[in-house]
Amino acid sequence: MNEIIKTQEFLSIDEPALARLASGLAKNIKDPLIIYFEGDLGAGKTTFCRALIQSMGVQGTVKSPTYTLLEEYDVDASINKILHFDLYRLVDAEELEFIGIRDYVGSALWLVEWPERGQGLIPEADMILRLAYAGDNRSLFIDYYSERSVLLCDGLN
Image (tube, rainbow, N blue to C red; front, side, top):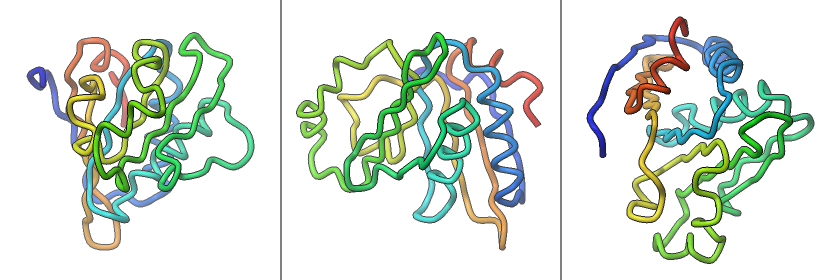
């Protein structure tokens, strides 16, 4: 993994605030990007992904890929597609070969929940969003690993 360039903290935020952050991020995404989501079960990873996907113009239901491993969404943008991975139920990282993981590299926005389970087969992250419980709310920590991710989130609040 590359070195962290910058870390940003959002402490004790509720679900509507998470959705606003996701919407702010979505407005700035113009190129393929890889975002990892880390945190305990129920910490808000899928909630954040769903809000981000909807903010990028996807209409209708945004399903969690818990059982399918991957949900794809076409968007009218230069990123071409959104790939939402949930690797929680992945038994062996090699299973990703069966869904053609290598065909997607460099051509989409990747949202990867439970990335540690796909280690060695998924590309390195441009940014990692770590969600944690903070009482009834959540805390969000964003680690930036590429200059373009830092620029993307400049002014995010």
